[in-house]
Image 1 (cartoon, rainbow, N blue to C red):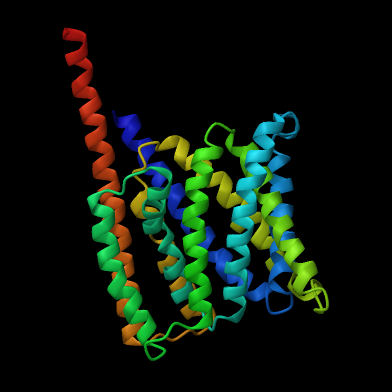
Image 2 (image 1 turned 45 degrees about the vertical axis):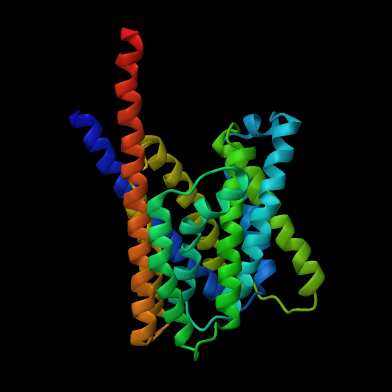
Length: 307
């Protein structure tokens, strides 16, 4: 019992590191986009990260059955479109804080979009959505009751990420994590590269001035983040770190205020606070629902044996 509690604590610490790495990725990306176009940067980041992940177990990745490859590549294509929308939004946004909270809405949208795949959203999800909607309204108020172009793109990206999560769960649940991540990242990067060829081919790219931010994006914000996330999930399969994961947009807002001198109005801060509260409500509800299911299974076990 003690070992299990200790393992859960370690998993939560790793997840905390994951949220910090993810938040840092927003900052690294913003610095890279000063000298590079969004799609060119994302193509390099995701293809490079995919190759690095695949290099962890190259033989296993190469010997993946063709059917699994196609499923991972198809899911990665959806991820690529979602990432492209995120990249365009990041490039035209004034700061990072609001965008991070808008993207975090994908955690609430996952069970909602899951309705199209036969899943059923639980009561705590609808409660969280009800809390988040006034927060979204308050964020819109900062521009006179209209969403900025970057806000709309962030919202579309959040919706698409929720669809990606459901599609990934349905198509790739049986594919080993390293294998599916390798193919998905490469597919996502390829989508961004095609977008670069279509829309940004005439842009002047300057990797030299931002190569260190690019390297940090690939190594820390993508590869190390992925490795720690897998490790934490293997140590805490119950999903008890769900609340820890809600900290990502908070870190992004703090880093943006610190590094980019982003200043937010009281209305925007209230909106972000409501969205964060919604994320916590959803995470706590998910944990409680998971525990109830386990208790039910545990209670049904002895009853079946008696029969």
